[in-house]
Image 1 (tube, rainbow, N blue to C red):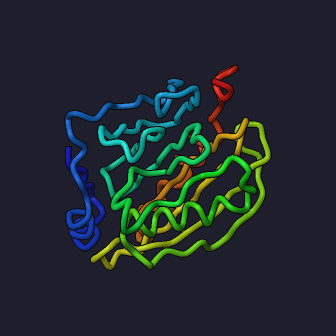
Image 2: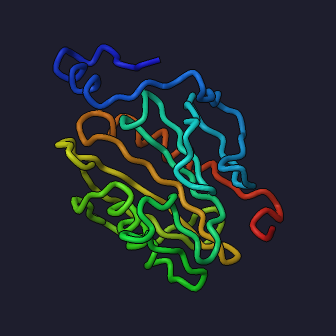
Length: 206
C-alpha cells in the first residue's frame, strides 16, 4: 500500500513526492509482539504496527517503516562485528565505507554513522546535532541526533539513534523522517521500540 493520509492538500502532495509504496513482499509487524530483528538475538516489542522492509541495508541490519520508505524509517544494526561496515559497499574502490572497530569509544559511533551515511547516500548535507550518554540494552550507550538531506532532494530530514558496544559488537537503532510533520509524529513510536529492546541471553557472544 502507498500511504498518503488526510494531512491536507499541501502535505498530501509532499507525501506523494517522497513516499515509496509498502510492497506486498514486506512483512507486517503487529503491535505488542516481541520479535527478533536483523536475524539476531536482538528483540523488540513495538507499541504499534510497523512494516518490515524486504530490502536490507546490510548483512546485520533491517529497516521498518510505518507509512513507507523515506517517510518514517527505523533501522536496526545488530551485532556489527570488528572490521565490518554498517551498510553494503556502494563503491568500495573509490569510496570505501568506514568500518566498525571493536576498540572504538562510544563517542566514535556518531562519526562512524555520519561518515557511513555521507557515502551511502552520496551527500555532504549530514550533521550530528547532539550527543549524550544513555543506557541502551542494559549497557553504557550513546544517544545522538542528526539532520541530513538525500542527494537531489530538498527535504530536510531529522534523525535519532541509540547505540552500545557489547562484547565487542555494535548494536544500534536509528530513526529518520522528514522534518515536516513525520518526525515529531512518529519519534515516540521509535522511542518505544528502543525502550523495549533487549538481547536474548548469550546472543551477543555467538
